[in-house]
Length: 358
Ligand code: IPM
Ligand code: MG
Image 1 (cartoon, rainbow, N blue to C red):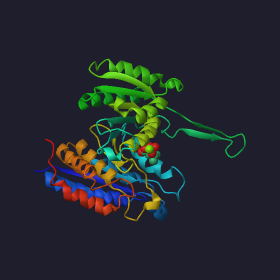
Image 2 (image 1 turned 120 degrees about the horizontal axis):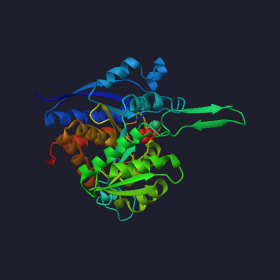
Image 3 (image 1 turned 90 degrees about the vertical axis):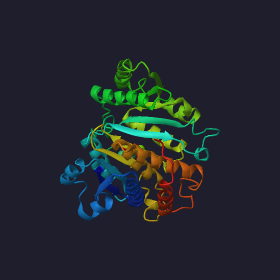
Image 4 (image 1 turned 135 degrees about the vertical axis):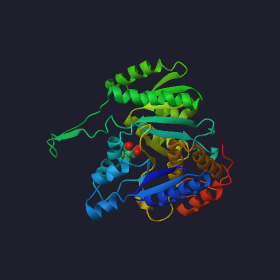
């Protein structure tokens, strides 16, 4: 009996539905080619749904989503609504509620001409960022005092726990070992100014002793952004806290060709996990069939890899890499001259012909 995976699909806002449409077409096609099944359940949550019903993400739907094997998300965010409301109600709800403590962001350049850096090749830009995904300034612990007055005080807690730090650091060491490339893990923090990050420094050292085969390196976040542009080949596996990881991975996405290609996994190993493009909802492109769906298609590849369908995952990745290298998809921005569905068609057309790594 071929395996069938239950996938919750949340297209979301803006360009989300269009890019997810193409991601799902690719998912269904590789499933047929590689011999497994997918059962999709679509959820309407996002701005339109909220405006029509005042419902963000009801508990009953959350409980259902939890019962799937994985979640595919498009994008969340709409300028008509209060900043952060849907982001918190939908994305952060799943990250916290499903305890998706790893945010995995591969930074891989597939074709040299897509890199804005001079003289950098695919060999130079090939690392992966492990971003902690449940703590830091993202727990929603904040407050205002004397709000709206000249004496206003606003606070937001930056919170790190030993358990939360240790589990993500351990995941990153394991990943550095699994990648088997440069066998190096770089801790990115700001322990010189954010003194609570001493917890990261100590945890990294302690856990690192269990991985004598993995070299430990360190960079402060400000220096890490500089290295990312100057010497990206310096990185192999990077582990960092939630907010620094958020910022560093948008920068890193640019050196791999832009947000049009960058995908991510929000992972709790062994449990239902969520995959999404890094880009946002881009409201000004919504409904125009111009957004590039490659990042979502790559998120589908990550999802299949996570589910153990490594052949199908590699098939998608190799197909996309081939189309980018040959310039059949000439660029990743809205200047590519290709519509959202044309990019999807190109991927579908090339999928079966690709010689898949075994
Ligand atoms: C991301 C996004 C989110 C984050 C926003 C939408 C809350 O920027 O996934 O990187 O900051 O984590
Ligand atoms: Mg971000």
